Length: 191
Image 1 (cartoon, rainbow, N blue to C red):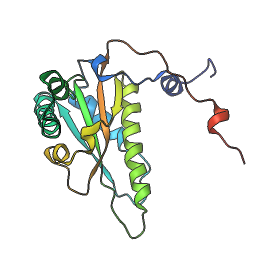
Image 2: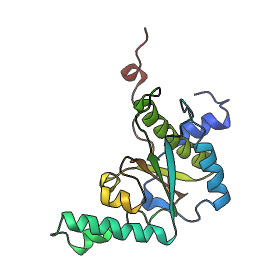
Image 3: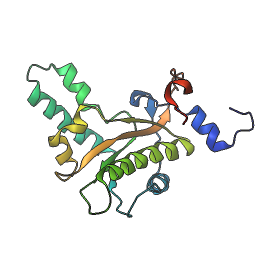
């Protein structure tokens, strides 16, 4: 990349996923988060359906939802020890703010469901980019409980809604080194 990169390209070139355990407070203020979510919602959206929504998980809600996650894990794994259950309880407690991106893709007469799913993914990526451009670090994860209906129902998801992912947002205590990225020769076909 050129040394004359603009700030957006520079941020994209440096962006790394930071594990939630390395994301600390302070997280975004309500005003900062509202600005980030406003930018997250500015994505391609064929038909203006807004086939996604956001669930903000912060403060004590992180521990409450963590307890539900641990209970679901215990129900499926009765042999689980307290160390494992403590890990499950803390899944959403590391970063100061976690935003669940919910896909509301549904059959439509004109808009393919696949396009709606992609729009939810774009909203999640815009959230990641907007948070990083605002000086925060992020990690977009799903984990097993992102597919568990007990947990999703506790978060208020309707039966037809699915989770695109949890975006953990905070200040990095450290930024991991870059991982190997694929060579363009491996991922680009020119016709």
